[in-house]
Image (tube, rainbow, N blue to C red; front, top):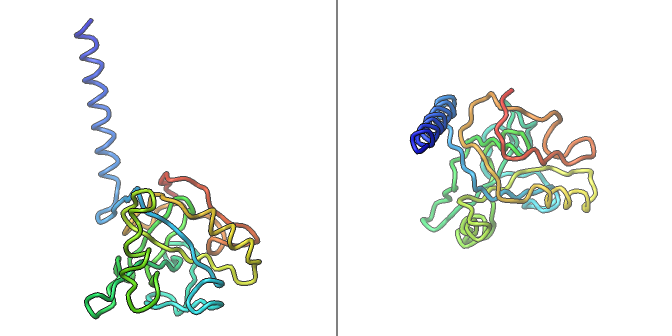
Length: 197
């Protein structure tokens, strides 16, 4: 009986190791899965300056935007610091991030946190206080032409500690529609699973 149990346990270990190696080998070089990103959202109403799509570090877009495809990722803001006298982003401008819960690609093009000492602000230092997250990112969800209550509800719906993929391959599922708010709905809630297309 002990031999049968040992054999079954050994087989289970071999299967788990094989599955892990398949998962790891199928991930593109440079991709990094981060399971504890604190994700928030910003909009036309609460951008700096308010009522604008202005961004601080344009890469692909002159202003916040994007459809969410790999080729046209949506703008995302990250924490930053001016402690060294230079503005240093928590992730370099141009870094792509795939967020499974909204099934869209994003690109770092903006900074989260205002004032002369953003390194003291929540986006740069507050991730751990949010469910022990390792990184805080703020996704652009637009909202121009929508009511403040609708935009605020969407912001609340996407705010959570979730998984994200840094430097993703271009082959993950993308939800239809431009941006996260489109056609009068907030498109989120797909979960943390990575789905290929």
